[in-house]
Length: 351
Image (cartoon, rainbow, N blue to C red; front, side, top):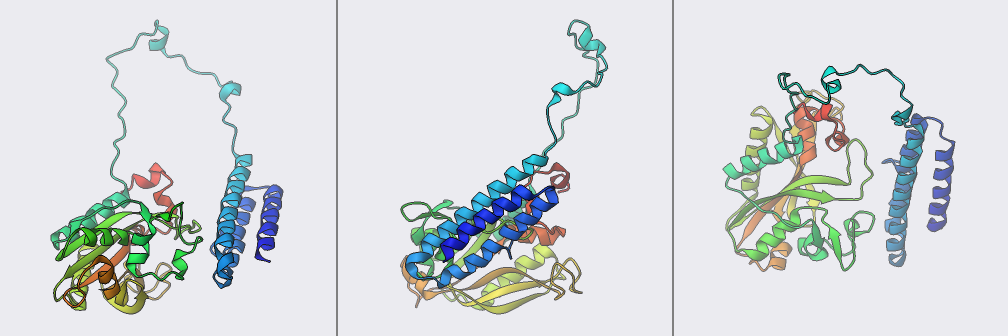
């Protein structure tokens, strides 16, 4: 049974960490159990095929196991941390004449220059995107990060059996509350409050229980956009996104729209740009294809209009969504999303 597999996995992970003798061995154990292709991920792939009454329980057990193993890994790393006990430091210290002179302080000495802080690269990207879309006539809207299931799924035409609604893909709390997994929730709240025409973007943090690696994080930033009015077409969507991409990435950038599927848009498309790292010649970042996916978009599904009380015969609209970290990584050639959140000033001071 799956429950027995999870219990056995917990025991093996604990034993492997206890046997690890170096930080490299601990990292190997972490990747083996928590990585994108790790043991827990393989088990979680089988959860959707379980009977409905078992899905939720197994999802919670798998997420709990991920947290427990993560804690065990951090605990194991501490075994190799250098001692910070300074009481044994016997290194002679040079005496400070100013301090020796009864605590006097020489006011003629120049002061120590304090380093200036500056805006985080993620915030810089958000501000730049807001500036670009404001010139295209889009207003900025915000919404709560602690959200209701209705705004995150129901009103966005996400069916009850959609995988994104499972415990292992969303951070659920009690009473049908959750940490929002997309800022599309702000689109619904805006349409509930106002009548068309609407032209807005919604920047903010979103949360998904992904295993943290070079390309994924359990918290990241999104910017969703929405335009609703009479006579809006896919041509308007292409114009808005092409204008944004050429301003943000440069006039020489090329774009392509690929058919895709999203529950809240129909028709839907994935949008790619020519790789700015290798000038579309092919590299590791673009998987040697010359193209990099940057966002998803499409025409708003009539069912979404029905949920907010709009007349789908009268109004049409388009929506789009983009990951801020991904755009920032493409702009600066960054290959690890974790660098944004580690607070390493050697990295952050470059921006």
